[in-house]
Length: 381
Image (cartoon, rainbow, N blue to C red; front, side, top):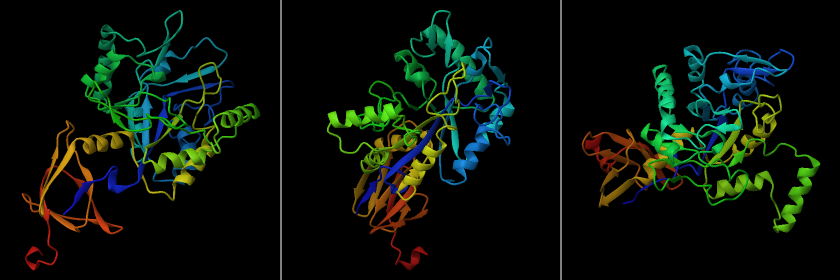
């Protein structure tokens, strides 16, 4: 008898998540008008909002899309007001949180700092870059406040991917269970394009490996530089399709990096961003559509991976025991077996496998003792 855990949920070949940074109740406009081209989340999901633009141009076409929104809790309060631009801001209050939660069909909400970045009078500071112990009281108080409003985070992406060991220890103590620490692997083959557990912290690290603008036409100079680089490195094909195929064929998670905020405060365009990259995103999901992919949020991927690396199966003839040794509640996995049905030996609950090629897949299986269920035994019906 075999009963084997699968690398991804439902024995999918790999997983895909859309990671959107910097959704905030703000907009910056040169002429005082707000539309999807300059909305950062201020308009929520009203008719002319960026979220409605995303819905109409991507989510309706690909309703299976799942991902994570990374929320900086107060970054919109630090937008410079002494510019020629019109700055619009609103409170990140219960009403705004309700708006974010109403999109849970597609996205979960994760932590992206409080201030995100700020100017200390001399330079721009990334909030967690050189953070010290005395700074965490302020951040803890903010997290406590937003938890009371219903925002409870599982994961974090540090602003600018800048952090120190104090930052990692802090979020571990706050019961976060995953991080997205680096983006060095974006759009290129890299040893860190894998899910992994950090060596010194009880945290799962999710790579950020595909830019949402990968199919966006490059300038002539960029195309020329890419051609020269490919010649020097003896690369025959460095196309977006080739890279995505590399991720898929190697069962690496496909994590798409985007920003909701489409400008920096001085009005210059930020790349990548949802509005400017919508055609590129369409091409990405069109390419992925026929493939065997689990579309999931970052938290779902991290929780499944935690269960995968912390679960063992012990088999004795037609009985087996599943033991999870991690720290997350309600941990469950997918398994594949040649038997079509199994039974929990304690609760007597019967699980029916889903046909998959010449075997059967069992989803949402937790720790416990099980046995093969003989479908031909009339006493079992």
